[in-house]
Image (cartoon, rainbow, N blue to C red; front, side, top):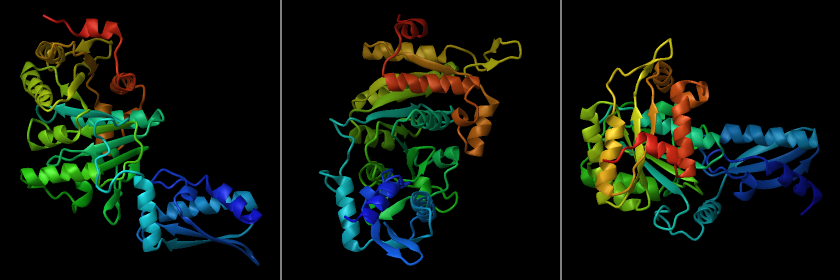
Length: 371
């Protein structure tokens, strides 16, 4: 390799493909490098002609080359040939077969299912914020919006980008450091989904097998409320997943949430813990106004502990926050916009519990009283 080529490759190793999250020099995206009368010309090969990150890649390539050579650089954007694309897909898959589920038994990825007995308890908001918080800590995070009928994760994150298709492989868009897939990305506008069981099962399967997730530390699943077809399918596909049950303080909600947690036991999922959302409103004098009552989260944890014979912890109580709801509506997670908000602090503590995969003994003792 010539000195020019070596310098170009070294410089371009700093350019990371936004979708694949790897240097373009490792992905076969650097083409012909030539020295011209006016400077340097470098060809960059995109995976597809309609690559949504094309402009970003071109700008980053120009930036690092100008910084290295300090002269005029011509960046020629091209598209991979069929053979080059086939080689790239084989490289990404490694030893795995096409359309295989990478999250079966033996996976190093820790999978968490965020579920609830009914809708409207803030499940998706919590899931989105936890995913972003984990990514901000440097973890590789994937997020599947498995709430097919009530998908909301793209809106929660302000995500408008669409997945990129490499033939039978799907590259999920990345936002706030999180790889995300949702049925909403494949539908025009706010079109409703009206599918029966087999189609729901197939959608969940494709989210796992057709999407290129790469090496993830965590995969979070925003589950639909209740115990229907999607919950059964997810249970079959993700045998090592752990469930986090979201509820609110009302006892009526707690009873339904307990059902959701118990359903996971039938398909083999371990219950990681319970989260109580909208627990209280912090008043101006610092006191807590329990607008929706109290005890729902503790009751779900107690009941599931009895059912499983294992101490199921109350992982946290998230206070009512107008900023949390406003941030969700704006598509900007609260853990990024106001990390000191009490709700954000509670969500950050939940993320810490997930990374540690355990809780201090004091948390279990204080929050769960076994009968």
